[in-house]
Figure (cartoon, rainbow, N blue to C red):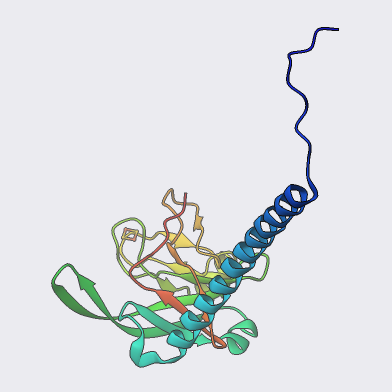
Length: 185
Ligand code: FES
């Protein structure tokens, strides 16, 4: 058999120990790195939550909707008023408004904008008499008659469902970012 003239390198005990130590440090570094990131994320989350409970430090567009426990027990829907300050470039606007808080078909908290998706009029709760005629009807637009059900989906007329807001929970309370309504797709 033809040899290439080089003998295999002998692995000394010192070289073996040195390589093993580097390998062990490498693995420890990776593990510490990922747990470090995990703990860093958890600490940041705690800080965010602490900030949310100090209402004086909240950005003006984040508004409290209510206490989680009370909202969980909600039956039907509730109209919740808010005051917000929205910063738009260098202009600051004070806004008074309200949202409808209800539950999705699966019982999740659902926060609906009252702004009609046709031309922006404010939708109102349907009266008992109106609901007797159409039981899925919950919200009605006084301008051109668009109708919406309990979860804000349009009933009959071809308009988009009502915009929603993502609930943000912190310190046992629920908040929304009023500057970020979510359109239905
Ligand atoms: S603005 Fe609501 S139906 Fe037209």
